[in-house]
Length: 306
Image 1: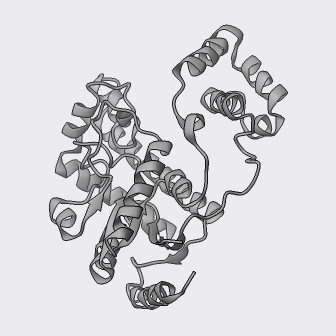
Image 2: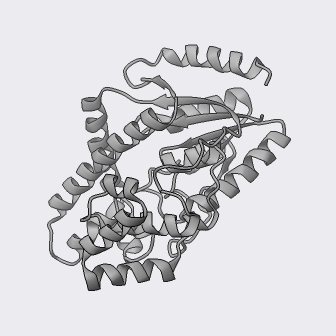
Image 3: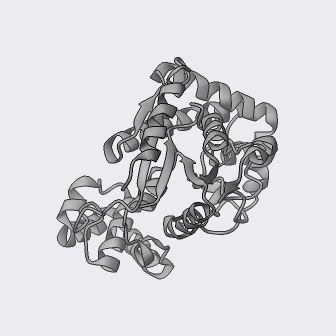
């Protein structure tokens, strides 16, 4: 199997700096595993690498879509696998860097996504109409009848998740939470998980939001929210500005909402990677020295034969 180095973790823990260091040392090329950095003009709110950082190593799957375009995990899976093959073919090391857990998992394992992960507007609109006409509890009862396992995990008030579970069952014939078999790993990967003390992490996230505001996040958000129904406009750091732009919320309240949502997302990211994948956890914020030990472990992994 092809060797793939993976760096995961929430925002503000040093993924970009570590990826550049390792890319330089191991002749690596970086593939972004972030669901929002694929959009052009979404630079500040997505904490995209700077022009200088992008020039320091080859980067892929950044700035490949317009803000108005849709993107899915299935698209990422296909494109990232192509990039891995190309990079490996050049004799370089693919380095996946990002915080979108579903993207990382779908790439590394043999998940058959296809139509099940694409947006089916007809099916989705039909279920949405049923929810509005019959009520959300009636829609949940329909899910309970065909997929009781999923219904037990999803509250009837969460219409979006109920609809998603119905879509997956109708499209694939299987439950959204119980795949028929555990997908096999497609790559020999070494995964580094970056984290730090929870209180310190939240403090760094708050500081990063303040820095983003100083860099012009408000103007970037106004540009994105010209079309608030796009996928890009749903991202944290953008959607929170809509009430402010419409005069329903103060700027201070908006900034605090971004910080709160960013902290909550970071917590979900850490939970996802801990529960679904097996990173080698490292705290480079408080203890920079472990980077040397990581490189020793990477050297050993690269020497191993599959």
